[in-house]
Image (cartoon, rainbow, N blue to C red):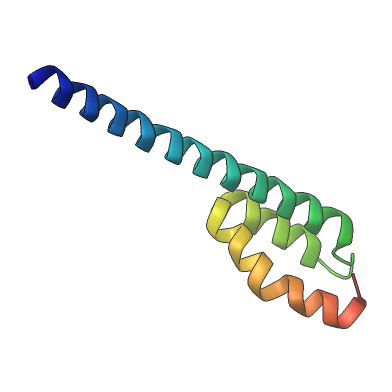
Length: 81
């Protein structure tokens, strides 16, 4: 019984590691996507583009989420895609 219990704990640990690895890779891809989106689609009026890129880079996932949910819809409604 002890060996089965140890095996289950190891498998559960491996499952959590795989889940968090996939989550981290997804977050990294989203973060890079938001940097590229901001750098290529954000209009170059004033310092808006530079400020948003700095926010996304330094605030990482939180900055990318803020850009995605707050600034991106505003930009799309004002300037199109």
